[in-house]
Image 1 (cartoon, rainbow, N blue to C red):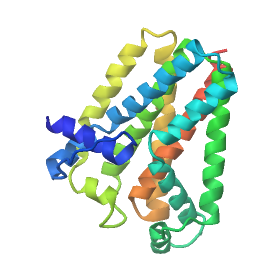
Image 2: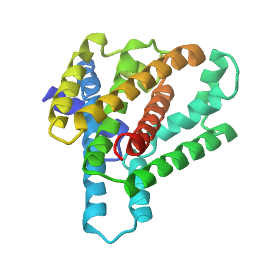
Image 3: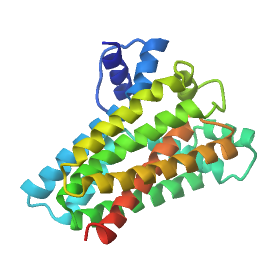
Length: 262
Protein backbone atom coordinates (compact mmCIF):
# COMPACT_ATOMS: atom_id res chain seq x y z
CA UNK A 1 0.00 0.00 0.00
CA UNK A 2 2.84 2.40 0.83
CA UNK A 3 4.48 1.71 -2.53
CA UNK A 4 1.19 2.26 -4.36
CA UNK A 5 0.71 5.60 -2.64
CA UNK A 6 4.27 6.55 -3.59
CA UNK A 7 3.45 5.68 -7.20
CA UNK A 8 0.31 7.83 -7.05
CA UNK A 9 2.36 10.68 -5.60
CA UNK A 10 4.58 10.51 -8.65
CA UNK A 11 1.55 10.67 -10.91
CA UNK A 12 0.43 13.81 -9.08
CA UNK A 13 3.84 15.47 -9.34
CA UNK A 14 5.06 14.39 -12.77
CA UNK A 15 2.02 13.74 -14.97
CA UNK A 16 -1.26 15.37 -15.91
CA UNK A 17 -3.17 12.22 -14.91
CA UNK A 18 -5.82 13.42 -12.42
CA UNK A 19 -5.32 12.02 -8.91
CA UNK A 20 -8.03 13.81 -6.95
CA UNK A 21 -7.40 12.64 -3.40
CA UNK A 22 -4.80 13.80 -0.88
CA UNK A 23 -1.77 11.57 -0.35
CA UNK A 24 0.68 11.52 2.59
CA UNK A 25 3.93 13.42 2.08
CA UNK A 26 5.96 11.84 4.88
CA UNK A 27 9.40 10.31 4.38
CA UNK A 28 8.30 6.64 3.94
CA UNK A 29 5.90 7.57 1.14
CA UNK A 30 8.36 9.93 -0.55
CA UNK A 31 10.95 7.15 -0.39
CA UNK A 32 8.49 4.81 -2.11
CA UNK A 33 7.82 7.53 -4.67
CA UNK A 34 11.52 7.63 -5.59
CA UNK A 35 11.53 3.86 -5.99
CA UNK A 36 8.52 4.14 -8.29
CA UNK A 37 10.02 6.76 -10.65
CA UNK A 38 10.87 4.21 -13.38
CA UNK A 39 7.39 2.67 -13.15
CA UNK A 40 5.79 6.07 -13.78
CA UNK A 41 8.02 6.32 -16.85
CA UNK A 42 6.95 2.82 -17.88
CA UNK A 43 3.30 3.84 -17.59
CA UNK A 44 4.01 6.85 -19.79
CA UNK A 45 5.79 4.62 -22.26
CA UNK A 46 2.89 2.16 -22.25
CA UNK A 47 0.50 4.98 -23.14
CA UNK A 48 2.80 6.13 -25.96
CA UNK A 49 3.11 2.54 -27.18
CA UNK A 50 -0.66 1.96 -27.18
CA UNK A 51 -1.62 5.20 -28.87
CA UNK A 52 1.14 4.94 -31.44
CA UNK A 53 0.12 1.38 -32.30
CA UNK A 54 -3.55 2.28 -32.64
CA UNK A 55 -2.75 5.34 -34.76
CA UNK A 56 -0.47 3.44 -37.15
CA UNK A 57 -2.46 0.21 -37.42
CA UNK A 58 -6.13 1.11 -37.07
CA UNK A 59 -6.61 4.67 -38.38
CA UNK A 60 -6.33 6.26 -41.84
CA UNK A 61 -4.14 9.03 -40.42
CA UNK A 62 -1.11 10.08 -42.43
CA UNK A 63 2.43 9.59 -41.16
CA UNK A 64 2.61 13.29 -40.40
CA UNK A 65 -0.63 13.21 -38.39
CA UNK A 66 0.45 10.15 -36.39
CA UNK A 67 3.82 11.70 -35.62
CA UNK A 68 2.17 14.94 -34.53
CA UNK A 69 -0.30 13.16 -32.23
CA UNK A 70 2.46 11.15 -30.55
CA UNK A 71 4.61 14.27 -30.24
CA UNK A 72 1.68 16.15 -28.71
CA UNK A 73 1.03 13.35 -26.23
CA UNK A 74 4.63 13.55 -24.95
CA UNK A 75 3.82 17.12 -23.91
CA UNK A 76 0.26 16.73 -22.65
CA UNK A 77 0.85 13.63 -20.55
CA UNK A 78 3.45 15.35 -18.36
CA UNK A 79 1.61 18.66 -18.26
CA UNK A 80 4.83 20.33 -19.43
CA UNK A 81 6.39 20.10 -15.96
CA UNK A 82 9.77 18.93 -17.25
CA UNK A 83 9.71 21.45 -20.11
CA UNK A 84 9.44 24.19 -17.50
CA UNK A 85 12.61 22.87 -15.88
CA UNK A 86 14.32 22.68 -19.29
CA UNK A 87 13.53 26.34 -20.01
CA UNK A 88 14.55 27.59 -16.56
CA UNK A 89 17.80 25.62 -16.63
CA UNK A 90 18.53 26.87 -20.16
CA UNK A 91 18.04 30.49 -19.12
CA UNK A 92 20.37 29.92 -16.18
CA UNK A 93 23.03 28.04 -18.15
CA UNK A 94 23.20 30.51 -21.03
CA UNK A 95 23.61 33.42 -18.63
CA UNK A 96 27.23 32.19 -18.34
CA UNK A 97 27.21 33.53 -14.78
CA UNK A 98 28.38 31.92 -11.53
CA UNK A 99 26.48 29.14 -9.77
CA UNK A 100 24.66 31.32 -7.26
CA UNK A 101 23.45 33.69 -9.98
CA UNK A 102 22.26 30.77 -12.06
CA UNK A 103 20.21 29.48 -9.13
CA UNK A 104 18.63 32.93 -8.78
CA UNK A 105 17.75 32.95 -12.48
CA UNK A 106 16.03 29.58 -12.19
CA UNK A 107 13.85 30.95 -9.38
CA UNK A 108 12.66 33.82 -11.58
CA UNK A 109 9.12 32.97 -12.84
CA UNK A 110 9.75 34.86 -16.08
CA UNK A 111 11.10 32.98 -19.10
CA UNK A 112 13.99 34.54 -20.98
CA UNK A 113 14.93 34.40 -24.65
CA UNK A 114 17.30 31.47 -24.18
CA UNK A 115 14.58 29.44 -22.50
CA UNK A 116 12.21 30.04 -25.40
CA UNK A 117 14.85 29.25 -28.03
CA UNK A 118 15.96 26.10 -26.23
CA UNK A 119 12.44 24.68 -25.92
CA UNK A 120 11.77 25.38 -29.60
CA UNK A 121 14.94 23.48 -30.54
CA UNK A 122 14.07 20.62 -28.19
CA UNK A 123 10.47 20.20 -29.37
CA UNK A 124 11.24 20.61 -33.07
CA UNK A 125 14.08 18.09 -32.84
CA UNK A 126 11.82 15.63 -31.03
CA UNK A 127 9.19 16.04 -33.73
CA UNK A 128 11.74 15.33 -36.46
CA UNK A 129 12.87 12.15 -34.73
CA UNK A 130 9.30 10.94 -34.11
CA UNK A 131 8.24 11.71 -37.68
CA UNK A 132 11.06 9.73 -39.28
CA UNK A 133 10.63 6.86 -36.79
CA UNK A 134 6.95 6.78 -37.81
CA UNK A 135 7.92 6.64 -41.47
CA UNK A 136 10.16 3.61 -40.84
CA UNK A 137 8.31 1.99 -37.96
CA UNK A 138 8.92 -1.67 -37.13
CA UNK A 139 7.44 -3.95 -34.48
CA UNK A 140 10.39 -3.40 -32.17
CA UNK A 141 9.99 0.39 -32.55
CA UNK A 142 6.88 0.37 -30.37
CA UNK A 143 8.75 -1.33 -27.53
CA UNK A 144 11.70 1.03 -27.81
CA UNK A 145 9.35 4.02 -27.59
CA UNK A 146 7.85 2.56 -24.42
CA UNK A 147 11.35 2.30 -22.90
CA UNK A 148 12.28 5.96 -23.43
CA UNK A 149 10.38 7.54 -20.50
CA UNK A 150 11.22 4.52 -18.33
CA UNK A 151 14.93 5.21 -18.81
CA UNK A 152 14.61 8.98 -18.43
CA UNK A 153 12.77 8.63 -15.12
CA UNK A 154 15.44 6.16 -13.97
CA UNK A 155 18.10 8.76 -14.78
CA UNK A 156 16.11 11.30 -12.77
CA UNK A 157 16.01 9.02 -9.72
CA UNK A 158 19.72 8.25 -9.87
CA UNK A 159 20.64 11.93 -10.21
CA UNK A 160 18.36 12.80 -7.33
CA UNK A 161 20.11 10.43 -4.93
CA UNK A 162 23.71 10.62 -6.14
CA UNK A 163 24.15 14.39 -6.59
CA UNK A 164 23.88 16.81 -3.70
CA UNK A 165 21.10 19.38 -3.66
CA UNK A 166 22.07 22.89 -4.77
CA UNK A 167 19.61 24.42 -2.32
CA UNK A 168 17.63 23.41 0.73
CA UNK A 169 14.20 24.02 -0.72
CA UNK A 170 12.10 22.90 -3.66
CA UNK A 171 10.91 19.59 -5.05
CA UNK A 172 14.37 18.08 -5.48
CA UNK A 173 15.38 18.78 -1.89
CA UNK A 174 12.03 17.45 -0.66
CA UNK A 175 12.51 14.05 -2.27
CA UNK A 176 16.22 13.96 -1.46
CA UNK A 177 15.57 14.48 2.23
CA UNK A 178 13.38 11.39 2.33
CA UNK A 179 15.60 8.79 0.64
CA UNK A 180 19.20 7.58 0.32
CA UNK A 181 21.15 5.78 -2.39
CA UNK A 182 20.09 2.45 -0.87
CA UNK A 183 16.59 2.75 -2.33
CA UNK A 184 18.05 2.50 -5.84
CA UNK A 185 18.56 -1.26 -5.42
CA UNK A 186 15.21 -1.82 -7.13
CA UNK A 187 16.17 0.00 -10.35
CA UNK A 188 18.44 -2.80 -11.68
CA UNK A 189 15.63 -5.28 -11.01
CA UNK A 190 13.23 -3.27 -13.15
CA UNK A 191 15.86 -3.11 -15.87
CA UNK A 192 16.64 -6.83 -15.74
CA UNK A 193 12.97 -7.76 -16.05
CA UNK A 194 12.47 -5.50 -19.07
CA UNK A 195 15.64 -6.76 -20.74
CA UNK A 196 14.49 -10.35 -20.20
CA UNK A 197 11.12 -9.58 -21.78
CA UNK A 198 12.79 -7.90 -24.75
CA UNK A 199 14.53 -11.16 -25.68
CA UNK A 200 11.17 -12.21 -27.14
CA UNK A 201 10.92 -9.19 -29.46
CA UNK A 202 13.05 -9.41 -32.58
CA UNK A 203 16.34 -7.63 -31.96
CA UNK A 204 14.82 -6.12 -28.84
CA UNK A 205 17.54 -7.13 -26.40
CA UNK A 206 20.35 -5.66 -28.50
CA UNK A 207 18.46 -2.48 -29.38
CA UNK A 208 17.32 -1.88 -25.80
CA UNK A 209 20.90 -2.43 -24.62
CA UNK A 210 22.01 0.36 -26.97
CA UNK A 211 19.25 2.60 -25.62
CA UNK A 212 20.38 1.82 -22.07
CA UNK A 213 23.96 2.75 -22.94
CA UNK A 214 22.69 6.05 -24.35
CA UNK A 215 20.79 6.69 -21.13
CA UNK A 216 23.96 5.98 -19.14
CA UNK A 217 25.91 8.48 -21.25
CA UNK A 218 23.18 11.05 -20.66
CA UNK A 219 23.33 10.32 -16.92
CA UNK A 220 27.07 11.04 -16.84
CA UNK A 221 26.68 14.26 -18.83
CA UNK A 222 23.77 15.49 -16.70
CA UNK A 223 25.57 14.60 -13.48
CA UNK A 224 28.70 16.48 -14.49
CA UNK A 225 26.69 19.45 -15.74
CA UNK A 226 24.53 19.68 -12.61
CA UNK A 227 27.61 19.83 -10.38
CA UNK A 228 29.71 22.12 -12.58
CA UNK A 229 27.04 24.59 -13.69
CA UNK A 230 24.60 24.66 -10.78
CA UNK A 231 26.46 23.25 -7.79
CA UNK A 232 24.08 20.32 -7.55
CA UNK A 233 20.52 19.35 -8.43
CA UNK A 234 17.27 21.28 -8.14
CA UNK A 235 13.78 20.45 -9.37
CA UNK A 236 14.46 22.45 -12.54
CA UNK A 237 17.77 20.70 -13.15
CA UNK A 238 16.08 17.31 -12.76
CA UNK A 239 13.34 18.36 -15.18
CA UNK A 240 15.96 19.49 -17.69
CA UNK A 241 17.77 16.17 -17.26
CA UNK A 242 14.58 14.25 -18.03
CA UNK A 243 13.91 16.27 -21.17
CA UNK A 244 17.55 16.14 -22.30
CA UNK A 245 17.74 12.40 -21.74
CA UNK A 246 14.52 11.76 -23.62
CA UNK A 247 15.69 13.87 -26.55
CA UNK A 248 18.97 11.94 -26.67
CA UNK A 249 17.07 8.64 -26.55
CA UNK A 250 14.67 9.70 -29.31
CA UNK A 251 17.73 10.65 -31.38
CA UNK A 252 19.33 7.28 -30.62
CA UNK A 253 16.20 5.41 -31.73
CA UNK A 254 16.01 7.58 -34.85
CA UNK A 255 19.60 6.68 -35.74
CA UNK A 256 18.96 2.99 -35.02
CA UNK A 257 16.24 3.00 -37.68
CA UNK A 258 18.88 4.09 -40.20
CA UNK A 259 21.85 1.97 -39.18
CA UNK A 260 20.62 -1.05 -37.19
CA UNK A 261 16.99 -1.62 -38.16
CA UNK A 262 17.12 -0.97 -41.91
